[in-house]
Length: 206
Image 1 (cartoon, rainbow, N blue to C red):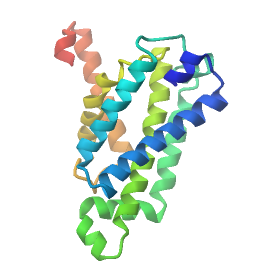
Image 2: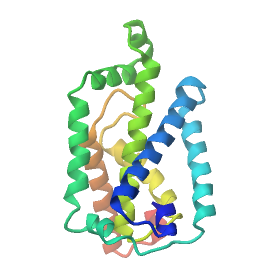
Image 3: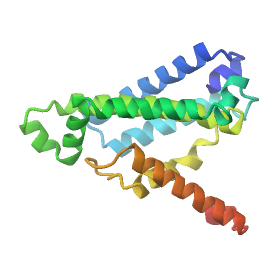
Image 4: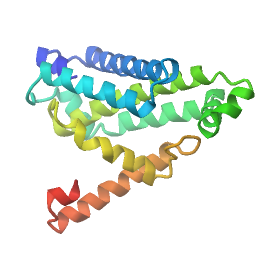
């Protein structure tokens, strides 16, 4: 969305599919690096994150805005729409055989492989889905701040990890879900709001 705002392209029929496609592509690239090339997942994902950060800063060194009206509406009266779509996608995934395979691989990939699960395929699909959800989150963040800001990402990197951890999602895999991650995110939001109310320094919040 940073590139499209920079080029003046604002149609949701172009921006949304393109953002989701980029997210899925990056997720697939991470999946290839982690599952086929067998680079440590944290190294692969942080590496692509740093590369994309550099590309983004090259395209757009400073924030640009405002965001299109349809995108800003996603942070207001239409905020329930993307949230409902994400929840629907998660419910659909929960009801597919893939979900059980994913949990099995996350719990014990060797046991899953012995049982006949195609571990590499399951992990690759997981990375693609992660890229899609990350792209959706990027669109919602852009709608929230009302502009395309290439410097906003690092602020939320550790917050996102903390949210899923607080929500009971195992960072080792095999346990967790959308509900727990959402509760963790709400907890962090409430904690930040409470500290802000008491005029706690931004450095302490970070």
